[in-house]
Every structure is written in structure tokens, then in C-alpha cells.
Length: 367
Image (cartoon, rainbow, N blue to C red):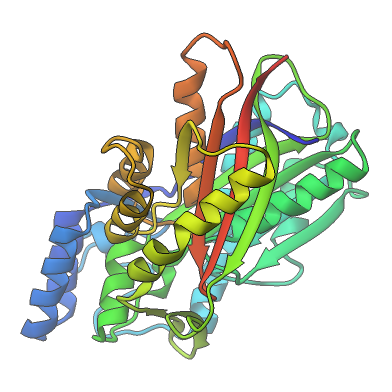
């Protein structure tokens, strides 16, 4: 058994409204066709606000710290090395902030944390984020460290599976998981449809949680089961490649259709493994409006079944790996406001390169 004792979320510092993003793009990109496409994507995205670790996107032309934007100055497309230098600083700052928020309210002392797992697909450096966090948070230098890199939006499930297996093998373990993504550092002046869509969708954020082999007091989430499903013949529909001017995203318009075709089978197979036929609640990765609508249609859910997913999409955009945990946290906080009677089943899923559907079932638990 393993239990999620607490979840903390943190968006990046600079908010970007849909109007600000539209204005910034229009100032930077002169191509009128690209502007019309981008404006259409913004209107249809269901995203009202997202966040960035840099102020560029919410500034008027020429504004910024010291009179200039931090990264994307006019006519400049920063090299990947420049972006990674900024990533190393900003990712650590955001990760530290969310971990400190988590640890403040935990009964677990820092000295009791036995493992740390860091997750990111938007940057890498060595010594890595895991070591930097240990030093920043004052954790034991003997803590066991793991990193999940470059797996995309479903990577939180990979980290949760690792933590779950650790706790099953050693019930006294206390595993700190931290996902941090700085997607906005990878804006590119590429006017392809894939790049325009990724510019609209992605923002920056972080999430931290503590997983343990033993329950704590109060309400928490128990991990019941995981399930992975690699959809055949879809490997070219989504990609994330390291280029000379940032990381390059491939996003096919076929992705929602493929999820709609395959998600019901994944859902039924996972629930059957724990003797259930349906879940009580859903925490689905807010990858985009079309993806959420495809999920809803495939499972024929009530209109408000994915309310928390749509709320996260509206307020933060797609932050890659932390996003599904933002949804799970939001749903769990809502459930905690209700009197605990019997365990409730939460089905959660995220999607990423492969195409891969990664899913889990959580049950509410009170000790």
C-alpha cells in the first residue's frame, strides 16, 4: 500500500491573460495569416490565464526588467543553451517554493524523507534538480535520488509508480515527488500549426507531494492501481525534440481522436483489475479542450464530470507533467470539504508521446 499524505501546487510568477498573449504575439510576428491562426487558437483554447517564469509575454513592447524583456527580445531567438541557463535558475526557484509550501503543513519532518524524485521535460542540468533541491531544502545528503526526464505530460504517473513501488518494498519510506515545467522558455518564431498550438497551450508550474507506505492522520489518497496503454501506430503524432533554438513540439490534430478511440478500453481494464465497473470521480490531465471533450464523449460522462480539469485548463493552461496533479489536488480538496463516509474512487489519466495513456486509481482514505 502507499498513501499520498499531501499535495501542493504552485504556478509561476508572471500571469499571462489570453488578451496579453494575443497582443504580444501580434507585436512579435508580422505574418497576418499566422496572427489570424493564433487568434483563433486562443479564442478556442478555453484558457483564460496561464503563467510564466519570465515577464516577456505580459509586457508591452520595450518593457521589462531594466527596460528589456528577460529572454525574447525583439528579433532575438535565444539558443537552447541560453534557455537552459535560465531554466536551471528558475526551475530550482519554482520547485523550492512548491516543496516548501508542501513541507510547512506536513507532520513529517524533513529528516524523515527517505527518497526524492524530480520530474521535468523542459530542461536538464547536472548536478541536477534533485541535488539542488536537497541542498535548498536542507534534506539529508544520504537521501536516495531519482529523476524522471523528458517523458512529457504523463511523467507524474511514472514518478508516482516509482514512489509507490518504493513504499510497497519499504513501508517506512517517505518519498518527496516534485514536478516542475517551464514550457514558456521554449517559445519559437516557427509559424507551423504545431508550434502555434503549443504556444497557446503551455504554461509554467510545479507540484509537490509526499507519498508514504503508512497512512497519516486525516483524509488522504490511497493508491490502488496503475495501468499503461501504448496506442499502436501513433508514435509520430506527438513529439518533443531538442533543437538549436529551444525544444520543438509536434502536436497532431489526430490526438483527441485517438484518445477518444482508446480511453474507454484503458478505463475499463484498469477498473476491472480492482473489481470495479465505474469510478466516482475523474482527475484527467488538462491537455487541451479537445482532449477533455474527447474523454468526456468516449466515457459518456455528465457535463460537469471534468469540471476540475476544465478549471485547471482555464486558470493555468497545460503545464505538462504537473497538470494532472493540479487537477487531482483540486478534486481532493473539494472532497475533503464533505464528511467522510465511505472510500470514493478517483480515476486519473494523462497522455503523452507514444501515444501513451498512463492512468491510476486513487481511493479516498481517512485514518
